[in-house]
Image (tube, rainbow, N blue to C red):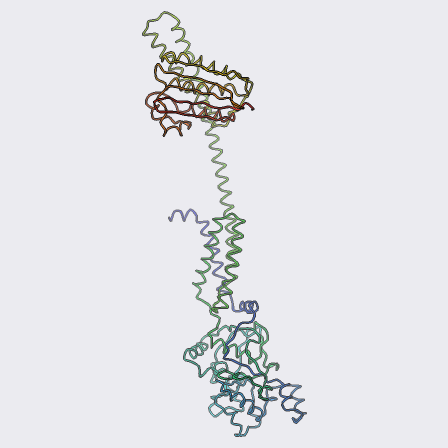
Length: 599
């Protein structure tokens, strides 16, 4: 296994590089990437336990009318501050209307300095323990108490929010000073589980999971003052009171400009529903990128490039959809850019690697083809040379045997000379078969068709074979149907006819019978050889025309190379014909071929 890995080290190093790219991107990714997520997903549902009360300048003017000091009003409208909205009686009525529905907590985000007139004790709603008043922290980090702070400052909380270098609020961190943060102080009476989430914010800044613009139920202070409040609107709720228009109450966030009360409501919502954006350990992201990498490599190794590209697009869409779903539903950040870059890197690098491998394979194939061609040429030259050199002594042997047999020799010598001549003819047939096979494998066989008298070819072959049949006292019959000349390669067809008749003589026992027949049916010429031999076993028939195959019975009774019938089938099919064979054990064999009349 290690050896195989080492052999494919080029591939593994490329994949390791792609994986390293994918792992490095989440490591250097910052929370600013959440901005796009917040904008793309639109408004989300928020906690129903939080409601907002907006107290704008128009509401203040509409409620107090012309009885106010118009000089003060002009001044405050020209340079609006939180102090513009202070009047003890008005706030006592506003808070009283809210307290009637028994809210959980009321958080006033206006900062009223201690320089304002101290309210009378008759305004009891101002001193309710359910009311939180906004405090501040000076430049040295010391708390600045508001007008309504009690002796211990338990009803005071700060409203400052941390901004990034680009003046955008993205994170929330609990205060380290003596005053709590208003978004957390409003949850003091919550469950122990929520209390633990509050404490957790003191350790690390938490990315705020913004739910969108205008997601919390909101009512104007004017409606509250006039008693136009829906039933149960404040019951058991956390109420944030503030201004939506003052510049000092505005903050830039990833979802747009939010007022202070909306921003505090988002923080409280994150704590209540545990919606903080969570980042998993780096090793989990590494495994996630590895899975994406394995899927991409599997696709590229399984499908063609075009199909693989489409599948990778689907994978990219699936990864993006999964990331958005996990972010919106489970509040867990899964990287999108990292797996997309990994997919692109794998596609580019793997395509390059595959092209390199294919180019190397083509080069090797060319080298192997060149080597095989040289070996094939060397073999053909060797076979041709040996065959040519053997033909001359074989011809001399046959000539000497014929000359001696023509003279006066004893019976023993004549029998030996006849046997020698037969063996030399058999050797000549082997050489011819080897030459034919060599030409076939070198693709140098070409048809030289000409008008040929097919019956004449058969008769010539029969006359050539008849002495062999006579030696075995076989009856060789001809039944040739008259026909016109046909366009064939006479040499090849003669070789085919010779092989079939010679096999019949060879495998038919002494005193047997062989019938050779030609006929013309429709647009075909049919040649058939029937013998009275032992037949061919069924298990050998489907292989009888294969190269170098010899039947189980032929291996022990006769000599041969197993090339004769292979050449028969090849030469016949080269002419567009077909071979056929029928055989019954103990009854003989019928074998032959058909040739088309039209070339």
